[in-house]
Amino acid sequence: MAVAKDVVKQRRTSSRRKKDVIPFFKSVSIYFNRAANHLLKEYPAGLLKQIRECNAVYSFHFPLRRDDGNIEVVHAYRVEHSHHRLPTKGGIRFSELVDQDEVEALAALMTFKCAIVHVPFGGAKGGVKINPRNYSVTELERITRRYTTQLLHKHFIGPAVDVPAPDYGTGEREMAWIADTYMMLTGGSDINALACVTGKPINQGGVRGRREATGLGVYYGLREALRDTDLLKRYGILPGIEGKTVIVQGFGNVGYHAAKFIQEGGGIIVGIIEYDGAIYNPKGLDVEDVQRWRQETGSITGYPKAKTYKNGNRLLTFPCDILVPAALENQITVENAEYVQAKIIAEAANGPVTSQAEEILEKRGILIIPDLYLNAGGVTVSYFEWLKNISHIRFGRMGKRFDEAVNTRLVDSIERLVGKQFSQIERNLLIRGAEEQDLVYSGLEETMIFAYHEIKSYWNANPEIENFRTAAYVSGIDKVALAYMQLGVFP
Image (tube, rainbow, N blue to C red):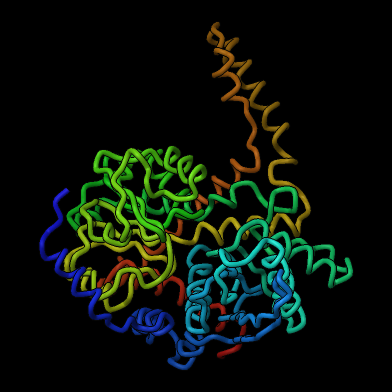
């Protein structure tokens, strides 16, 4: 594939001069301010300012005894952005790039994300400043348990207080450690203790469908946008996900599942970017085959059915219909925004496009489906898990067999009336009652579709709203502000 000369030149010059990237929370605040300007007639400016700021920031250090006996000091954070709803909710990331600015920005995004999808939580976020690849499993367990202990001592965790979840660098294993530590420290006095954290293994109170939830939510949201003929006409994009070429940045939990569901929906995954390189095949990649290769070799690079690029982020500027950044923030900046060739940027990660880059992309007519909507699948299904934990019953348990009995009688009646019988496969499909995963998928799909059209209703009602992201922020801010007003905090 030929790459334009100006793109090559840009890459060379950008390696020699690195422009400052705008701080993440400042970028979120810029987005917020643009949206808040459309709500000044509805709410006091002071209230909007309060909503923008983080309510509580906990920055702390703790010692870690390494396996070799040495002591290391670990820096960690927990930020609760808004208490208009309780508990607050947000993931915990393990990354050496973690800092207070990043955690505050992510917590703010969580507030508006929850509001957009009608999840009754305030926004929060946590971070531990380590590279998890540099620590053994036992060291990671010590870090996770000590982090949980610190949160509990300062009342920053609990089923009705603040509920963490997985994020970059963490997963089901760490969430199980958090739940166990919380239960040990509270002495078994809280019957809802498992609801102190979500994203747990299934046999530790997790919910089926949580692992793939964020990636599946990306697919549902992207699919709905590609059905919106009015929006697509504005950007000159043909409807439908089928046949569209897609490049995915990040092949972790979110990126892998987003790629998987997009491919199953008819999209063609032509490129995958990871931290150690990227692979590209203009004819398409088999996502499951790439996943098997990575599991066998430890990397997607060297995959025999594609070309490997050592500088993986080169693919951000390769031609495709849809670019799905599913890694970290600040990936598309003023340095590469003018070279992006995608028609749609679907933000599966939090904050992958800086506010400065967005202005360039908007002028170029590129549609951005924003993170605070598209990335909301994870918190939506985390909400379902939290509900499961506090109700103490698996979804589908009460109704599955009853539904199957009703469906069986209905199918029997149809067969008698028409004088013909369904095949056993058809019969099984017709009478089957909903399992937990079916209900979770259905609830997530409904949530993403409803939220999409609600955002569009804000946009349609106010033609002065600049773009999809601003409309999404207006939707989120409006709900948070209304909650504050109804609570009587700002009479």
